[in-house]
Structure formats: structure tokens, C-alpha cells
Image (cartoon, rainbow, N blue to C red; front, top):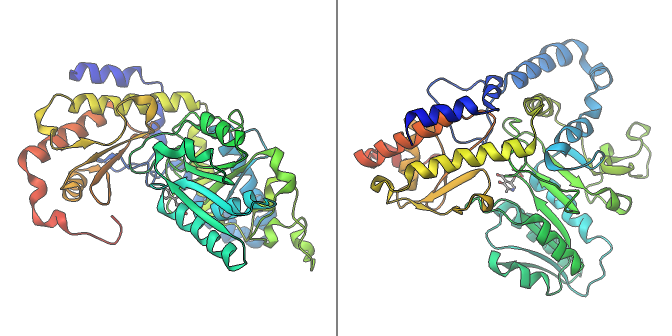
Length: 414
Ligand SMILES: Cc1ncc(COP(=O)(O)O)c(C=O)c1O
């Protein structure tokens, strides 16, 4: 692929102008939008306005005047089109982990199995499994026979057929980037009377999702990755309309009450998705996410998906056939349809290589024990940058620069 070809890709890119929404530092190629999306000008301005003007001047009146109180629902409504959800089914609140606890518990409400079984994948994101395990322990302590059944991805379909209550899966695997067939697995689970919870943390904002069309029951997803909401941005949850009448939120708090400011003694859940709120929403973070979502205006999920795949395909094609990269093993699916917006490579020196890349301005992730993970966010990356990052990686491997001692020092967050 020549420089001319790469330039042509950028010239033809219909999303190229969206980069202007982001405040990326000079000389930085940000292949880490899958961990922490970058700062948008819209978020920066909104947070300043919320702090200085709304909180600063309007103080407590802002709950009504600036509609802070409605943010969980209005931000949820902005996320809905990105995941293929009709209005009234998405709420922005809490973290993915906390939302998962709420939905897992809600999905098990009213089930009368002799043994409650949550089925999941052994290499699911650990926090999802910790949450499921915690709930199982709680059930057992209350005398309910319960089990978290973990299986390998290739055994999922046969396990679905063997009596379980809930299927808990992450749509795009955080290590490999492998995508599950949401439609097929959801339908199969329903055939066997399982409800399904999808974790969309690595999907929202980069995949063409169709939750309603796939008849998904429940979903959770992250606000700080491809949605660019900022560090610790609140997450979102989805509950299909058909299930909302029978919902039971295990974390009943006043924000999910029908009349929170009536301060009634009895808990009476709000109707619809809002009953899944618990406590006071984090207005600063939620405002940052709200503003960041404006960067998606005018774009379709299909456009986002196509560009992100084109970026990762270009990166792969630049590596293929070049002996410099032979020490890297691709652990992501080679076939584009089977992977999300990331590529992961294993290498014995994955950590020092990732550190050398970061020092050279190519920001990537390291994931223990031996993965270099690159995220291809379609909103702000150019094809030229992707090509440059492949060239920088080549230089680092050729020179063996990553062997310098300083690249092996690990900080708390890797
Ligand atoms: C797939 C997946 N699920 C869950 C989480 C946890 O999210 P939170 O910190 O919001 O609980 C993450 C975090 O990176 C994730 O990647």
C-alpha cells in the first residue's frame, strides 16, 4: 500500500471532518479509544459551563432550571439510536458493574427453577463474573440453590440447551475483539427459556447494533470508552419495553421512586426504565457524556462500523508479509465480520513494546498477560495515523528499543 493509497483513503473518508470535535494532543496517535475515549471540545465546554455557570451561579435551582434531574433519561435517549433501541428503554446511570448487578437480579426475579443458573463465558470480562458470583453467593446465603456456570465460547450453544436461567455475555471480547452473533445467540437462548444480558462495553459507538430487532432482553454498556464520556463516565442500561412492567430493582433508591420528593415511607417504583435509577446522578460526568454524544450526530452506526473495520484492516495489511512483525501473533479474528473495533496481538514482551509505543506517541493498551491491544475509533482516527503507527511499531521491533529497562516498569494501571 503506497502513501498515495493511504492519502486517498483519508480524502474519501466521510467521517474525516469529525476529528475536529476532539482535542487530541499533537504528535499523538490515539489507539486507545476502546479504554478511555478522548476529550471532545463539546465536553470541555459543557463541563466548564456546568461548573461555573450552573453549579456556580444557579446552584440548587439547576436541578430544575438546567434539567439535571432528567439527565439519566435524556442521555439514555441519546445512546438509544447507537444501540438500535426505540425510546423508553435506555437509562444512563451508575457503572457497568452496578448496572449488571441490577439487571442480573431483575432477570432472575420470578424464576422458579430448582437451581438458579447464570450461564456465561469463562473469558468474559472479570468484573462481570465477579458481579454474577456475588449475586450467586447472596442467593445461596438466602437458601436458594444457585450456580454461575462458565463455559468456553465454543461450548456456549450446547450449554444454552442445558437448562439455565440467564445468559450473560459480552458482545465484543475485551481481549481478542471477537464478536458474538447477537441475533443467533439471543434467539437460541429464548428457544430454551433463558433471558439474555449483553455487555456492550466494547460495542456501543462502533458496532451496528440492533437490540430491538434482535429481541434482546437486557443490556449494559460503558460511557467512557467509544462514547467518549470521560474518565469514570456513567454507564448505561437497556431493558426491553416488554419486560419493564415486571421489573424489580434490587437497589431501590429514591431516584427510582415514583415520587422521590414526596419522601414517602413506602417504596413505589417509577414506571418504565427510570425505576432502575438508585441514587443521585453524577451530574458533572453525565454532562460530559451528554455533550460527547453530540459528536455522533448525523452519523449512522453502519458508517462507524465500516470505517473502524477499514482502519483495522489497513493496519493488518501493513503488517502482513513483513518479517519484522513475525514475532507478533494476531489473536483477533482475521475475518472482519468476526471482530469489533480492535486488534490484539500477543508477544512475550507485550508490556515493554506497549510502553515503547506510548513513548513514541502511539497510545495503545497492554492487557495481561501478554497482549498489545489497539482500538480503532472511527470518529477521530485517520488512515494516515494508522499507517504511521504501523511504521513506528516496525521501528521499535527492528531496533529492539523496547528492551530498554525503563519500559518494563509497571505502574498501578497498565
Ligand atoms: C467488557 C467490560 N465490562 C465491564 C467493565 C466494567 O465497567 P465499570 O468499571 O463501569 O463497572 C469493563 C471495563 O473496562 C469492560 O471492558
